[in-house]
Length: 321
Image (cartoon, rainbow, N blue to C red; front, top):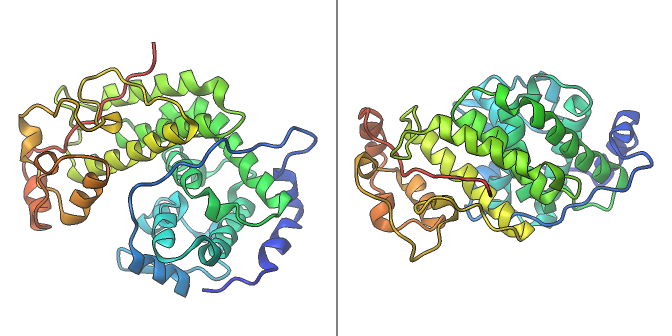
């Protein structure tokens, strides 16, 4: 897909995008950019560049995408609205090549959803969106377009304020953890967010405590959700590193912040999960040992899902005292 150089400029001239930008206030800025240590799918990224996204047998054309017609309650809509596809785009394209597409889609999202709270503002969706917007900010903020940049950053700040009051409205488990993780990342990396950091960390700690068994596994016992949890906290750990804050440590097996050489996980049912190769590779990039990730063939994922005691390795998070 190609995006004309003037497309984003035309979007920025629309009154709505101008209203989303700052008016008389000190401009927002990012204090750092989180580094995503997980490599996306180059094949899917090339599909994005070719102008379409595929998910669950469905496809959507990206040229002139009408975000208002994309239902975030569907699997395809949730993937689009979560902006996790930025990881795949980055795997297939340099910033110079991928930024026009990313910025065009983000600008259109702002026009459709940036000014009002609607279904696209679901707490879990905003948590995921913030994690990926902050990790791939160079793809979203490449142009020197002050109106667009201000609109995007101010929308992230508005989303942070929204999540501060709405994160606990997300369903318990992974959705609520994702909401609080996104808020915590925004508090770390947006220049206006530091005042809410302690509150965000406390909310994330509560969300994790209410969603996990003592062995660290999610109560859903879903291998897919456990792998997603690794991903969310991996992105959050990257935000802490970018902001030069220590990842909160309060547990000897806190994997999201664990450095090599610290104690390994205990045994138990966590040992019985067999991750698919992509998930095992993902865990490897987060620093897990081969014994801990126990990655095997994709069929093992189905066998693990059938085992009610199976779970991936837990991640623990405790806020600063």
